[in-house]
Image: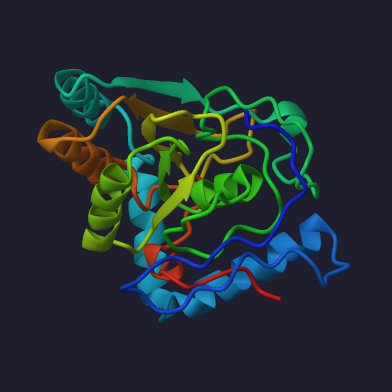
Length: 250
């Protein structure tokens, strides 16, 4: 868990993609429940036709949001790359997913966070050079995002390699430095069955792999992780709503 700091606007993502705004966190008096209902409606409208959105959601339900064989394959490749990997039961104390605070201490069960309580607004999708508040990034994971994390001491060459991985498939991907993470790198995702989400204490699963370096074996493992979990968020949000530059409704 990074130390508490006063939130500040991050530097926009570098090169190659459309211009991305810093996450917007002010200018609303709506309750988290009202905000959630509004942004869910807009997300599905943005996704294109209702038929396409429905097909994507049905696939998420049928596939169950990742796990099983996918976990085993990812675990094998992460081990081969010298990384650690774990899948944990998503934890949402009291069933309250949204907490309107950018400084509250959440009891996340992985670090960097792969699931759990988060801010009502997610961060604008992109690859950033300055740390984005993880309380927002967890919301991106809830929407099906796969997140690349790195410490402030991670070599620039490694960050450039992570950026290259991001550029391969930027939709539904997110990149940000993570305070207190040294020179390590990580990749995370939150998956789950949309039909069960929030019912009887079910909130899906969090997945996290942490590595000390990035090489060909790591890149292969990261791609396998991405392909296994991207777009399988527990809310069933379609990937077409997770494109670079997209952010929460104002």
